Image 1 (tube, helix red, strand yellow):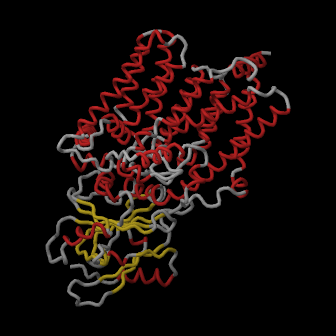
Image 2 (cartoon, rainbow, N blue to C red; image 1 turned 120 degrees about the horizontal axis):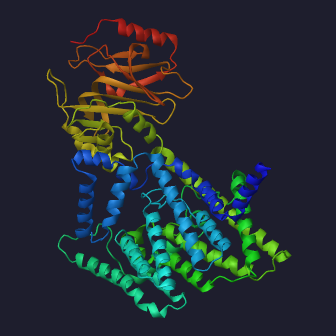
Image 3 (cartoon, rainbow, N blue to C red; image 1 turned 60 degrees about the vertical axis):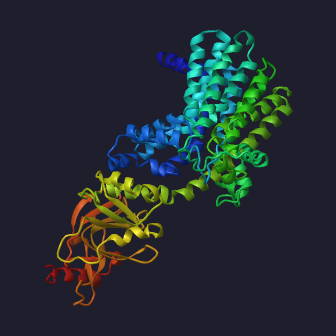
Length: 635
């Protein structure tokens, strides 16, 4: 009997709880799950090496933030100090990629929740508000472009959170009259405005809330501080542009009416469903609208259809009851869908970059506005059918299938974007960081050393910071072996002649993201580069070798290291050197790597000639053993 009482109490509690919140949350996590399979992207490539920047520049994150604030304020005339504080705090605290991505997903869920609460406060029924949040999650599209969900440390999620909380506090003031709610609303608006200039126009959102709230005119003066913040910050930015040090760096304003209008339209259109797949010719666009796509995403179709049908059915049943305040909801949806675009439209940089289907970062906020407009359309239709009738059932079925189909297309394109971005932003960077951190590939690198490395995208701007971060020491320089860094390569000595040269190391990677990957680091004695900057010859010693191993492999998989030795005096003919793992000392063992210290039978080897042969035949192993048993030529 006691069991049944506990069960009854549990079921009663579930019945009274708001089941819509976990349902929409589960749907959002389901759609955003591929985010965990992406790496550091866009500006995050550089910013993720913030700890290394602090090592290299011997500064703290606070020092870096102050320097960034000073530069962006007086050289670019952008008054956005909080964006730099947010950036430095994010990348200093969230150094692990998994927790970084988890935080972004959590912020999206928080946005959905506060938006749900705001819509209910503005008069929407719980079912209508939940449907809107369901659509907002469905409309999120990943892009091969600076994307507000894939990168940028949750910037737009924080901005939207501040905006919605400010609107909610403002509505509380208008309906209750307590001054503390107005003060909180103005403070939140000011914080968002000092983070990103796009929000300057968001005082219009507050005006929309004001115009659709009953009994508002007795508190008309409440709009003054919002307008004042926007006007003062705009005037200050215009004044900064007159100072001698101003250099817009791509953020110059262009007021050509035709170009501005077209750019604004591109930004607005990018938030509408299927815009990326339907309007662009990117790598992920071809063959999206096919039955094969539907077959590949049957769980998405089923989950989306069931969730949409459940929410729309509830909206239809409420259609004959108390009607939402459609005017306020429509105005809010329209403003959220349009207001983020005008300041994007006047920037010369975005006039050149944006295409139809591709929008800049504020497109994230526009998703919520477009979702609210679609929701109002569904609510309008639901109010004109009889609950339980054939027309109502057709409406629920057709609209639910339509939204589920949009989810399928977005899941397909989002998955394709993630697949393209996995190489090399997720893997092999994940494996390289593992071998540097836990494998200690560069352990003991002296301070002020110079590294010559095989380049990856994250080395282009922040190679020094990336390796300072993962070695824990201040390096003199990091030189990627590539065309744009060719001039750096000529500064190394041509030959080692009896005396130790300044510390320099050669670091090579071979397919580190695959099962046959390996990496090697060694002290550099000689370097020769082709005219285009690609390293053609190097002499290295004191080798540390990292070899990939899978979870099903033992710590020492069979392989042989092949290299070539060329005497510096040319007295000897070049000869091959082969060494097996049995003749190396294991230095570290990680999930994916075994790291060895290699004892060379010669003074050095030609670094560019190194290669690993996996699962070598017996004669090759015998040759490796014979090489090591021969007398060493080391002086």
